[in-house]
Amino acid sequence: MSPIFLSRVGCLLGLIIFPFFADQFYIQFVSKVLIMAILASSLNLLVGYTGLVSLGHAAFYGLAGYALAIATTQYAITGFWINLFVSLTVTSILGFFIGALVVRTRGIYFIMVTLAFAQLLFFIFHDTDIAGGSDGVYIYNIPQVTFFGYNALNLSNPTEFYFLSLITFILVIFSIDRITKSLFGQVISGIKINESRVESLGFQAKYYKLTCFVISSFIAALAGFLAALQFGLVNPDMLGWHMSGGALVMVLLGGMGTLFGPTVGALVMLTLELILQSLTNHWQIFVGSIVILVAIFLPNGIVSALRLPYK
Amino acid sequence: MTSSTNNIVLDIKNLSFSFDGLKALDNVNITCKSNEIHALIGPNGAGKSTLINTITGELIPTTGSTKIYGRDVQGLSKDKIARLGIGHVYQTTNIFPSLTVFENCVLAAQSLLSNRVNIFRGAETYALPGQIARESIKKVQLVDKMFTRADLLSHGDQKKTEIAMVLSSKPKLLLLDEPLAGMSGAESNTILDLINQLKESNSILVVEHDVNAILSIAQKVSVMASGRIIKFGNPNDVRSDPYVQRVYLGNHGK
Ligand SMILES: Nc1ncnc2c1ncn2[C@@H]1O[C@H](COP(=O)(O)OP(=O)(O)OP(=O)(O)O)[C@@H](O)[C@H]1O
Ligand SMILES: [Mg+2]
Image (cartoon, rainbow over all chains, first blue to last red; front, top):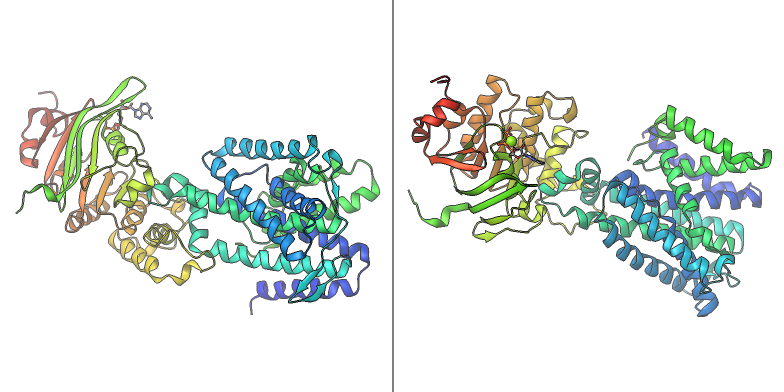
């Protein structure tokens, strides 16, 4: 058995037994790390594997949260699976339409157009009262996870919520691993290296980029759905460029184009925030400095130093 | 010998193209038949690469028509034209530098599999692309460097990589823009032999500055200057043409 495999199994076991020993605070914290890791990993599909730098990825994260909030509060649709279905569907459909437009652009224009779409969505929720305006919406009825009629998980319980996040995280990582090793994955990595060559070999690059965009928005929606469940609240910040930028920093910090880079990035960012926030009011300066140092000394991200498995 | 029109692979008629007012192609006519090597020669800036690029959809011609197997390809996207069976070896090497020679070829061969692929099935479970890649690499004699990253290779070997990659996508019409550039004498001969063999199964349009070399294997030659085809014929006709002699065949100063 390879050391890579053993270290993965070790981390997984640690994640499984951890909540039985830890404080509620830390259980919630690690749930949040897992959720951000899912978001960053979804963005990594675009940025790291396909070479499409999106600055508007939080749009999908936030929209999934809003879909949950609006469905439960305004339409009285409450039920874990139906809510999940609604959030993922609404977000993926939007991902498809935004994707169809943005994949026509390249480079800096792609960055600008994704940012513009996300800002548009931000202002729709911020400046109108479809969902509480700038205050956002509270989700009072947190749905229970039922499985063939049984109440499988009570999501108001932090430990049970933690396990939902962990299962989702594992499924997402597994899927991304499979996707990037598929034929589809080979073509998107070709697009990252030399898009025009991919096209002159007969691949429809746009089709691949659009598919990747939709998959990526679907996974971001999973993260947004979980985040809304965890906080019991959605607000426009979930869609804002701060959130998009934060996810991008996690990807770059951890190591783009690597399977676990975004997860490491999410863990490091949130841990730094947690520690520095308790020490100083100017914690953002320190977080920023550390990001800059990593960018200079570890341009391929933290995992390149940990020698964690690539791809 | 059949001289019927049904073996015409590429048929270009009255094609013109301008770069912001500069007329790079002026009423060009050219045809390529199957199992035939058509050499395209001419001085720098004649418009040879521009012509190739209008065929592949890289550039959109102003007027004229381009037919591939009788199908008008005007306005089709680059990837669609490629899927008609066109392979393009660019003048400036165009490969995936951070991939190995083998990976370059495998990726190209994967274009032969359906686009609607199962995103959860591992790429390595398809045997065909690897097989095709190995064959192409053998053809260009790069087996010993098969697992070397392309960007670490010499210019000549990168060109070979591109040729092997393009062959891996199994094109029927090959457009080769200076395939011998950057190669040693021995390497040139390998590639010339290869082009000559490929004739058995392909139609080939090849741009080359090494006129003696390319005329030794070509069946048809078009000579281009200032965006026009100024001479067309078989290699012997072209060799005896005074203009070609003056420009290429060492009779300078006459
Ligand atoms: N992208 C471009 N923009 C403007 N002019 C161009 C461009 N590419 C080529 N040209 C011009 O078009 C003309 C034809 O160029 P082309 O590259 O087709 O020549 P060529 O016959 O391939 O020459 P060479 O043997 O040097 O490769 C030249 O005058 C060149 O300067
Ligand atoms: Mg040229």
